[in-house]
Image (cartoon, rainbow, N blue to C red):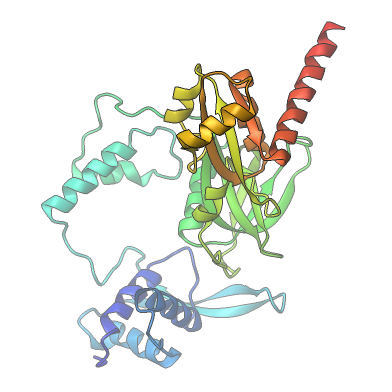
Length: 358
């Protein structure tokens, strides 16, 4: 066995990679992935070379206590830089369910897993989770007699899309997405993507992904997606950053890179202030300090009662829609770019209603 403090860690990583059926790993791919995961766990590591991984695999197969059955096979891979296909020799466990680290669960582990499965099983309509029932039966988990948690859902016509995208993201799989727009439902479009995040907003699901051609972030409503095709021969590129952190600056899912983060001052009437206080418009929402509130009442004497709030976020369609949804019970006081957009939307609404009376 190699006298290396990271040897067992590498075996654990290789064990995970060799059992993965969503990727085709060559020796070079395994070396790259092992180094990536080692660097995440041990930032000061110098990494390992391909020869080390070759020795590790030989040890797993022939020298150690595992005697793992590893198969070699060839796939037709795609090189995006040279834009051509080539034959790539890959490695994997012959049996995808094999693991050198399999062990029996403790009673505590089995109990926690049972509770998680029971909770998950209450969310009816989850696609691509047929194995959940067999796992539940295997652990002897009873189905709940009554629903305890109820979520609002917007059922998708193609109910397996959510599961397919979940699998693609969790397995870091490039995909070809076929979709249509609301304006032209008859025309089907296609794009190769690196899927990163599934995000729910206002009872709709969205996919956040990067285009393979230029890495530009794109957003797709799942109700506009027609099909998902996995592209195992295309190398998956991770997003360089934290997507969840990126979307902390917006309401909804429309991300405008060109928009600054605005400090938006709001007045909310007595009718709606408790609602807004307990259900914030944005995570950054906070009440205005009392001394500043006094100044604002002096600046805007027509405002009576209510409460002032501040939110900090980028401008997008969802922000303006949310701000105008309260009608006269929410007034945007600043900054001017946001008040102008709110006034424009209200004027457009007024014009529509006025035309109904003519």
